[in-house]
Length: 130
Image (cartoon, rainbow, N blue to C red; front, side):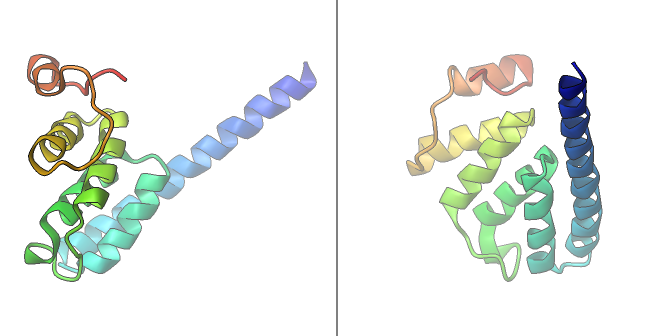
C-alpha cells in the first residue's frame, strides 16, 4: 500500500513539474513570438508542447504550415505541421483537429484518419474521438 501511494505521489509530482515547465516555456515562447523572434519562439513552443501544452502544439502547426513567408526563420514543413496539429487535437484543441483534416484532405499528408473529421468539429466544437 505504501509503495502504491509513493508511486502515485511520484507520478503526480512529475506531472506537476511538466505542467510548470510547459507554462514557463509557453510564457517565454509568447514573449519571443510577440516580438517576432520566431525561431526562439518555436524552440520554446516545442518544449511546451512536449510537456503537454496543446495550445503550443497548435501554434507550431500554424508556424510550420505557413513557414517563413509568415514566420521568418521557420521553414515550411507540412508533415511537421500535421504532427503538431494532431498533438493539439489530442490535447483537446478543435482547430488542431480541423487543420489535421484539412492537411490530410488537401495535401495528402499521412496522418491517422479520424472518424467524421469535419462534421465532428462543426457539430461539437471538439476533436473527433480516437
